[in-house]
Length: 261
Image (cartoon, rainbow, N blue to C red; front, side, top):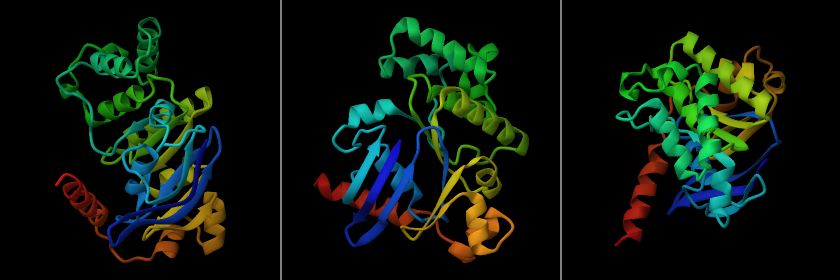
């Protein structure tokens, strides 16, 4: 469902993603892990058509995100790390607007919106303004919204960041049920290693732009002779504190400024 081969992204003399390859089968839950600044966000931006790679190949549901952007975009839903809902609209209006943007036919769209809002237990709050929702409710709504157009792939960039353990557990219950019921491929990042250990079938760990390990959580623990995925992660990436991924972001901003001169 997701194929990446020799993918590289450079911003002038800075290499954010360095010749990575990975494969995610249809219907799998896949964790993409790494320290701050490792290249996770840059990779997701390339996969979701927001950035063009310097070199390499990508396929989403058989489509090239560079040359088949519209088809690729229809193939995935995405929940960004930063909030992206319109808080001045109701939950239902946010869902409806997303469906219109993706040209989901009206008769199908309304049934799908109700189905998803019921699934994430927000149907009773469908007419409430999103600005009155808790953080967990907003996250559940963002996940539901990303699924309106029946995507084959769901990208989740730290979907449970800042949520309490109870809400995190509920979010993952929804995601695992969606994966099972709709055979949806899930590609996610997280800094909560226990989440990846619990829900991911396969894991890739990226550091300094390179993939340093791939395998099941159990295989990575065996490889590093550790008892938890967090310890395996630290064994593979080191214990030094990392800066945020500002290097890639700063180079991207500079690149855009130069293009528009």
